[in-house]
Length: 102
Image (cartoon, one colour):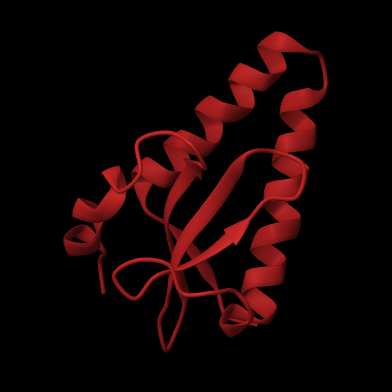
């Protein structure tokens, strides 16, 4: 398993989304976080399993929420660039490619 790191904005998106879901239905934010945790473990275990997306990134769709994790499969880690809604603002995260610390 590779270690996983988040771009600061991807982590912020994750937290904001969980807070939004929690504000709508008690416990839904936690279910979102639980699914994120499951998907991150899945990516860490088999990063090449998920399809290429844009700019040599890969994506892992969540099963129960309309979100995806956009990540780079690097030699020493998984770097999550975005916690992205599947239907909103495609490509907004691309500028983060140049901000990924190495």
